[in-house]
Image 1 (cartoon, rainbow, N blue to C red):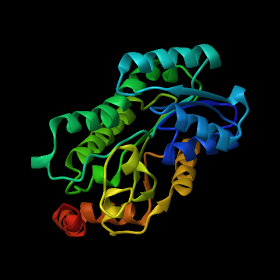
Image 2: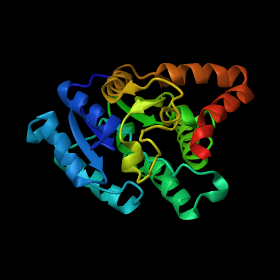
Image 3: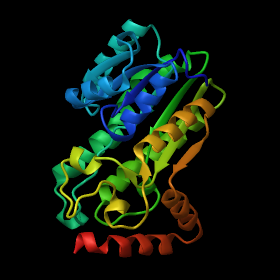
Length: 270
């Protein structure tokens, strides 16, 4: 679909990949409804983007709160008249511990943001998107959604849920004007650990990255690939050589892929 002149909702717009997606959509002439939990991150992103006020609407909102999401979407519709695309980028990781040691409250938090946040935004916008001449939904999963990462079991489960939800949504939207795409980033240079409130020995951002398993993709490059997916409407997108390699290996030999990642992550779990 054409990006210029269209209106897009982007979650997680204040940081990392979401920030880059927002900046690059604006640079291509789009208008953006930017959602993030932290208002200060949105303000910083707006300054970096340098977009005119009429092109960017900032909303500090918790996407796990369905009522709050509905209110923001109604406000955005009132301001812009229509929404042409939804990009669910917001996500958090869990503490780096085995499932046996993971607090149930932490499990709920990860599922609430990563899965239910996608459900809430999609439910709020899908009827309107289906009525547009052309529209898109782009949901960011993770390579952890198809290859299990020890110490990130619930994070991976949340991203696997996003994968299946998006694929089913694709099937349900066949024959409509809504292009549905699922994105699988590998290790990307972001502050997801910090933004998730997760302390990692030695620093780092993504599960595979912290173990030194693979080289990372820059947030800017990941943003470019996602915006390109908006324009082209593919079924699925892989970001990074690590995601591409593990995608192939998990299809050919799921057990081998699982054992490979387990060995790479062993140092983090002790």
